[in-house]
Image (cartoon, rainbow, N blue to C red; front, side):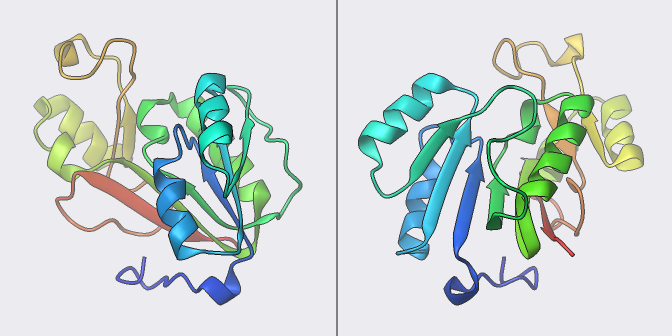
Length: 180
């Protein structure tokens, strides 16, 4: 985040949301970085949320429905991250969740999002690579990708996820947005 011009200062952050937290892998790191801050994980997988509640006592966890809204007040979080959540969602779902994440982010807060980056999508069939270059982000169900990703996933590939510019040729595209 610092290299992108958005350093995270522990003093400016009171509450953190890890959207799509799963088993809390990212929250474990955030817990070390933001000791004493209120950390929250949200995920649609109730089994993962149950495991996280039992084993990760430093944070709060809540399950969320597959579609918005989240059970949080508007502007609650100073920092929101969604690591590889939008890699497996449809364009319609992604739009709705991006709007919802903006709603729960405090004015001046930061949102960090990731999806498959150029190092991955540049190896796709030419027509898909061109769509990513042209459209910025593509969710695909192409039969040409069968076997490349686990069954049931809907991979998304991005130049950037929402705002900001990702570093060139990374395996994960990142966008850092500041809410006005």
